[in-house]
Image: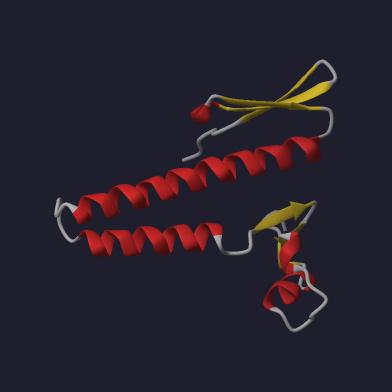
Length: 130
């Protein structure tokens, strides 16, 4: 099942991205500006929400409320860490080929690092279109 979570349109000479969940509307002249801003803002919102959920469960644990909250806290901290402390990466399809994209901070000069090897191994599989 597919679900739209954001809408990208061109309004006059500007691009506009609407992210209804947060009432967020971004406008920019260039797509790279728009997506960079959206990434930073949504990441900050999501990180704040994640930390708020951890704080809430920790507070409940402090007062002895609920079931085994120490496990819940550990789970939330693990999920937050795996989302916000891991180098971002995703699959990109260009034409008939799929590539793995890895965030700039993982592209180091050290060719032995995992991030560098992932970035250099751009072609990861043929596209489903083949």
